Image 1 (tube, rainbow, N blue to C red):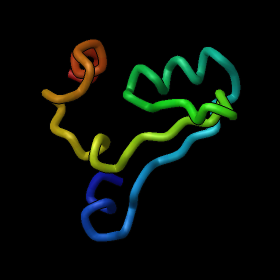
Image 2: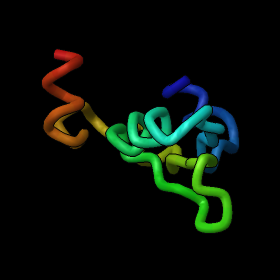
Image 3: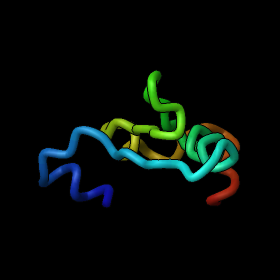
Length: 64
């Protein structure tokens, strides 16, 4: 997935969270909510491709 953004024209990754808890989970990875659709979130491809040391501290620790 991360390499796809380098070879394809990928601007963002979008997810449809099943509930508030799931939406909060995605926010922990840096996803942002669409203002009019709070259970739909997006993450810019440039953020997804960031090095692990640029991820939020709690996420980097959990993967690490």
